[in-house]
Amino acid sequence: MKLIVIGAGYVGLVTGVCLASKGHKVTIVERSKERLDLLKRDVSPIYEPGLEELMKRFHNNIAFVSNLSDGYSGQNIFFLCVGTPQAPDGSADLQDVYDSVESILKYCKEESLLVIKSTVPVGTNNSIQEMVAQRRKKIHVVSNPEFLQQGKAVLNTLYPSRLVIGAEDEYSIGVMKELYKDFNCPTVCVNRASAEMIKYASNNYLALKISYINEVANLCDKTGADVMDVVKGMSFDKRIGSDFLQPGIGFGGSCFPKDTKALLHVAKEHGMEFKTIQSLIEINEDQKYKLIEKAEKKLGNLCDKRIAVLGLTFKAGTDDVRESPAIAIVKRLIECGAEVNAWDKMAIEVCKKKLNHEKITYCNSIEECLKDADACFITTEWTDIVNVDAEVFLNYMKTPFVFDGKNCLNREYLKTHGIIYEGIGCR
Ligand code: UGA
Image (cartoon, rainbow, N blue to C red):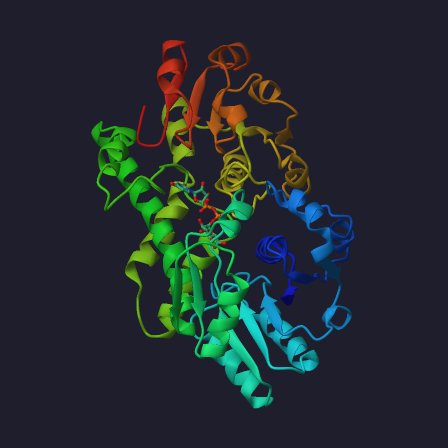
């Protein structure tokens, strides 16, 4: 089948390339010239395992263009994958979505499918369908949310947990099923509003799980319980499971922070207070600074103390620092008057540009980062950080205080070698 994907961000690029790998002919529209230049050379502008290999392998099935007029040659399936960033009031900014719909309306002549993959507030797909009807175009709007995780995006797309099709006519469902026939997963066919809600409810539920276990961890800190043992004990209950119960410094990234606020906003617009979501947003905001509170308890005022921050991305396996708790921590440390040494596996260069301050020293190695530090904060679970030898902490740091914001280090090993260790909800 022939299709056009609008937007070569995480969702659009990965979806387009994975559909091309199943034999479809995919044209991807990307307006950024810088990205387009890379894409045309089969270079991925994002770090995503397996993506570049697929781009190269299925090169003949993929074309990259800078605008719809260059790419449109009668295709009748459009995938809309543009960003929906957070507006100042917490709602989702739909400007790019509506601009893209306008250009599709301009060029599209045949009976077509407009598949919305962008995460949009409940009701948006229906309002797009109304826009289409006003122009008397035969375009069927379908909501088809994605559930891919950064760092595993290719795997999540090729082997999805489920396929959600929000469509309101048999023609659309038929085309969608044909398009995805080589993807082996359960298919949930619902109306457009339910599909949009499935996306928000899923992300918000995962964010809620994280905030819940973070609160349990904070209580463990006060009571002497060990949160890692608590999680283990809970996880054997199949109704609870073990996923998304890793305590730490809170969630970040381009999805959870934005989608929690957007759902809260949707609820408010409908006159409802969504209390669990309101609370989880507050919990997550406070959670970012737990390591600083812990360090202050041990070291006193952090002014002029040197803190080694290991990890800047919002999680391991990505170069993305959007809404990263590590960045919030570095900023707060600076406000406290601390000197910061920072290291990351993937994001040093981008951080040098984004967060430049005389009190921040970006380091080329973990050893350099730890040198003369009064304390070390673990803020991303990179394997290189998880595997740091106790001797390295002891040899390089002024005092071996290690505050583990991801509960990812081998604390028994570190403690027996003289490290003063503290995690979130465990010691
Ligand atoms: C998230 C969802 O997991 C995907 O299903 C969804 O498709 C995607 O958002 C999206 O809407 O596009 P992602 O943002 O890539 O994916 O990241 P996650 O792996 O979910 O992690 C999010 C944050 O939660 C990270 O900061 C991570 O460190 C934190 N986290 C995750 C925890 O603190 N504890 C956990 O147990 C799990």
